Amino acid sequence: MAECEMYGVFIKQIHDELEKQINNQLRSEDLTMAQVGTLVILNRTSESRMPLKELERKLHVAQSTALGIVSRLERKGLVECFGDPADRRVKMVQITDNGIHCCHMAVRHVKMAEEHLLAGLADEERAVFYTLLLKLCKSFDR
Image 1 (cartoon, rainbow, N blue to C red):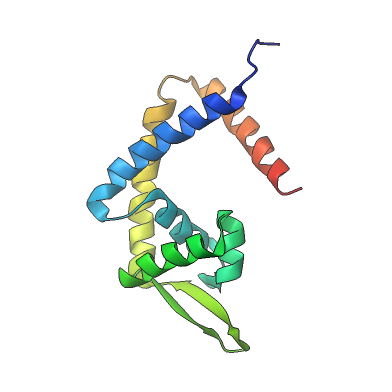
Image 2 (tube, one colour):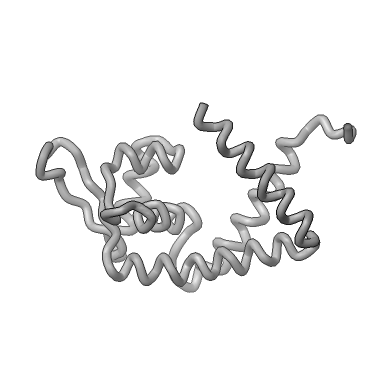
């Protein structure tokens, strides 16, 4: 086994570099990586909407953080917020048509940044890396 006792340091460096590249790509669109992540989550749901509480959970952030992200997206016209008709206490968040368009554009920027990050890996190495990332992410849900 390789002598590497501080995996977290490398994971953090990779995250920071990717986030920097993505945020630089998205700056011209006045978006952040966190905002794009929110749009992607909403766009992947069957009705393009979900309760704010569920969005918090999927983003792995506190309620105040999720609310801040959603508020900024709402001001930009990329999401709408409304009370759940079945339970007015539940705040629903729905992606708008403009948000869907913006999401597709932003995903292209993210893929470009990811491609730049992975440029030094061969196809087989990328496949192994992806498999390991999936395995780690699935362990979070336990």
